Image (cartoon, rainbow over all chains, first blue to last red; front, side):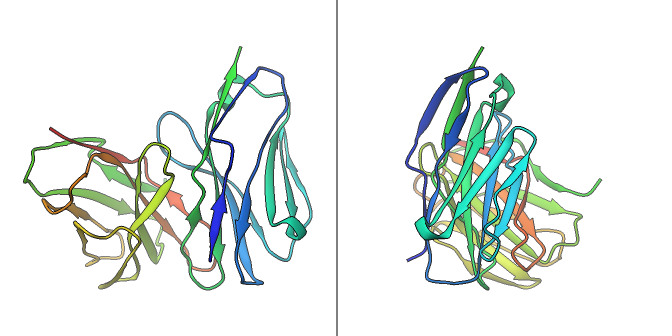
Length: 114
Length: 112
């Protein structure tokens, strides 16, 4: 089965706190792609990162960082020093090899309070 | 600027009516997708098309229909057979090869 699990339905933090959003995936493919998208209140999903299954290097982009661990089938997303503008729903997604169809998790709603 | 345009942003439908949601892209992407989003359920795939004049059912195709007569356009019709159509509908496109989707801004459909 191909599946993405985001166990955290909602997270609330105060500005400047660090927060980690969890993502666990299931696939039998050895080649696949993982993504994170942000959905602000406006509704449009915004691409954050793409990672292929052969690249386990962690990535940092400003206050955002991603930890990809194939051993635990996880692709977690950390926001450092969170800001109110980070408030959104965040989706993790899996693109199994040769399907070109994204399988989404149910999303994690992050609320950052001032 | 390249992107995906969905219209209308808000749509109200009476019981028993068919309605069509528009999705147009100028990204020259081959593949296009329709997703439905309900609170707490993430995104569910309705239909997708990887080439003009061809499309496949997704996980929840019942009560919906699509066409792909042009590369740029992938309209979705919500028919009267769809029992619970109130939802947020998102259109997406991508270049094939695992590069991820570009999304439109969505259409919020409400049955009145």
